[in-house]
Structure formats: structure tokens, C-alpha cells
Image (cartoon, one colour):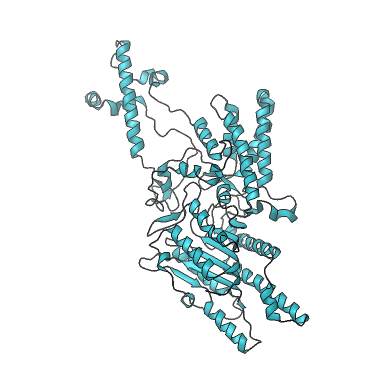
Length: 574
């Protein structure tokens, strides 16, 4: 076990998939950043090739020890080496490899591997402060699958992630200062709420992120330099006071202001690195948020207040509010296939529309005012602080974006699909077959979503999930043809053998059609496979989402006739 350090940085690459060769350069960048005696850097890397074991690196451990020994015999020799200076030598990662326990091998699930990696780091590389960065595929909310990997197919649920991060709080003295989620679409209110209090701050994105979009080498240089600066400042002060400089350095620690300053600089490094992505036409966004439970509980309660008012009005005979919600949903910033909406922007759009609607709907002024007030409270809570000096007290410390795609992103998204998700939708992730094999449980997507803390801890039954239920129901367009409505909708399309049929015969034929409809509908839904579309010219996957909330099955009477009365059809077709 290593000595107690000032800081341990743990970097986890969930790369037993197509990402594996792309992250090799990031591994090299971490090594090339250098080393600092009071900072541990522990990296987990999972290659994608069959029969290749996962790797665990104590980065630059041999060089750290060499410099430490040289400094003991040569007092003027530095103990730290940050950056390359003029050294162009390419060092191999295998110099840093340390034995890995069988428990962290790829035969275990993703959740088990991450859990054991975290526990290994806490136990063997103790420190006053920890930083954990998770790198891999994201978009957890709506799939309940984070960092998916192949061989075996596995991923981490939101509750798994909560349980794993709780390891940092078990000892009572270990503090996870920063959780970095270098993954797509992870800055959501559901994720932040589930992880509240388990880390102090979180950096993530609402939209897409790209391999190498975080400047890993510069991030680690910044981390190493900050610890070095604190220790060197203590040494300089000790020299001026004729005290033991090494003892003074040992007693010097990163303070709260040092850590906030470091985390903020890491955030800005990631944001500034996006410039080249923008020049290549890619839009980017980035969020730094405070996971203080007090902030998140207040936001949850404000969302519940809005939910209660909307649910009361989200009924078919009150189209005004339903239409305002639909329009605000359509107008507001969306992410990842229209499955998430920016919480601030949705409330801002809805609040403005409610204010405009008051003049035309005098009988609804009270409800429209309540909705607008609830929206205003939410935007205040999830917006950046008006007083910049108090930004670290806010839920959203910083939220920035560049490019056109995410220009209305304000920091926290919320799950807001256009129609009720179906179990088959879990196969439609990027790449589309990533989760097909392991998501085989009978638990529907929405049941997983309802189990999140953000919904489970809601008061008075006003969870966001309960609003989505009402929204899906109120906006579901009636099927064009349903049993009992064939004649009402299109009497000329009903296959009536004779205009002289009596009412009983007509009723019997309608009942037969209804029975055929129900049977065919059940058969269709049971066997439906919602495969992603492919473009005909290239055969590439098209993950274009639908924003239409239509019934899952409908059939016209004439088409139903082909299924219900096949023998008659064959005779008619002769």
C-alpha cells in the first residue's frame, strides 16, 4: 500500500468495445503529463481484443521512485517531473503496469469491475482527496445502462453507480472532490440527484462528447502542478522562517479554495479544448455542477410543484395547457434523439407561453399563473448564480456551449421522450446493438426510470415520472381505426356482404372484425422488433427518432379484412 497522498486521481476507461484503440493516445497522454510525489495516478484500461487481459497502471511509479532516491543522495535533484521539457523519449505504458486481481478481469460485469477498481484505489492508494474520471459510452437515463462493454455484454445502472461511489464515503475521511463523466448525455437532473452528496462536484455534458475532446495531458499537468504549488509554497515559507522545509511541505494540504480553483481550471481546460471541434463543425457543451444534496432536493420539490399543476390540466378536455406543454417541449433544447430536454429551457419556454396565453383564456388565468410561477422558480434554481462570487454555492457552477446544436443548453436535462418508451427501444443506442444482449429482463424502460431516486423520493405522488404518464396519455393520438369505430369513421369501408343484411348480421360481422383486430394487435405487439432503419444507398444505421405519439398498432378495415377473412379474400381475388 502506498503512503497517504495529498491526491489520488483514478481514471477508468470502459473500453472493451470499439473505443479501445482510440483511448491508447489518452493513456500515453496521462503518462507524458509527468508525476508528482504527493499525487497518485491510477488508471484502468480494458482492451477489446479477445483473450487480452485488462490493464491496471500506477502511472510513472518507477520514475517517481527513481527521482525520490536521487533527491535523497543529491539534494538539488528535483523530486517531481511535470511535462516533458525537452525530453522527446516515448515511454511505454507497460513500465507502469501492476498486478491486477482476477476479480477485475473482463469476465466480471462492468459494475463489478468499476466497484473493485474504486475499492482497490481507496485501499491501496489512500489520499486526503480523490478525483474519479469515467470514460466510455454514456446516455444513462432512458436506458439505465452506463459504460456498456462487449465480451461480456454488460453495463452499469444508475443505482449501481450510486452504490459504487458510496465507497468513497464509507471510511468517513475519504472525499471524492470531483466526478468527471467523459461520456455522452450524463448531465441530467436524474443523475445529479441520484449521486447527490457522493462527490462534491461533477463535470459532464448534456449532449454528445467525443474521444479526445478532454485534453487529458493538460488536465493531469494542471492537477500535478496544483499539488506541487501548495507543497513548494510551504517549503519556501519554512526556509524564510528557518524551519524544516520537508516537514512544512508534509503539513501543507490542499484547502477548499485550492480544490475549487483546480476543479474550475479543469473545467475551463475541457471547454477551451472544444475550439478545434467547433472549427470542424461539431457542437459541444460542458457543465460543472455542485452535488450538494440541499440544492438538489430544492430542485426536486420545485419540479414536483410544477408536475402537480400540469397533471391537473393534462387531460383531454383541457387542451390549452396540453398544447402549451407540447409547444414548449417542441421549442426547447433537446438532446440525444429527442429523449431529453433542457430543464431550464423547457420551463422558460413554457413560462413565456403561459404568460402569452392569459389574454386569450381569462377562465384559466389562475392555473396559467401558477404554471408560470413554478417555471420561474425552477429556472432560478437551475440557472447560474447571478452573483459570480457565489457560483460554487449554486447547483450549476458553470454551463457553457459552442456551436448551434446546444445553444440553449443551460446545464441540466430531464428525461422527456415524446411517447412512452417500449422495451424494444433499448436496442437503439449508439452503436445500435451495444445493449441488445444484456438488456433481456422483463422490466420495461419506464419502470426502471420510475425507480430512480428523483422519482421515488417525490412527495404527494407528483414525481416527474407521474407527469410523463399523464403527458403520454393526454397527447396520444387516437388510432385511426379501432374496434367499434369502424362504421362511425368510414361506413363505406366496412366489408358488408349485402346491403340487405339485418342489424344482427351487421353487428355479428362488426364483432368478428373487432375480435380479429384484437388478436392481430396482440400478435403484432408481441412480435414487434423496432429495428433501426438503414439508408438504402449505404446500408448505414439511421437512428432518427420519432416525435409523434401515435398508438403502437392500427389497421384499416380493408387491410384487416385480408387477415380476418383470408378465405373470402382468396375467393374475391379470383
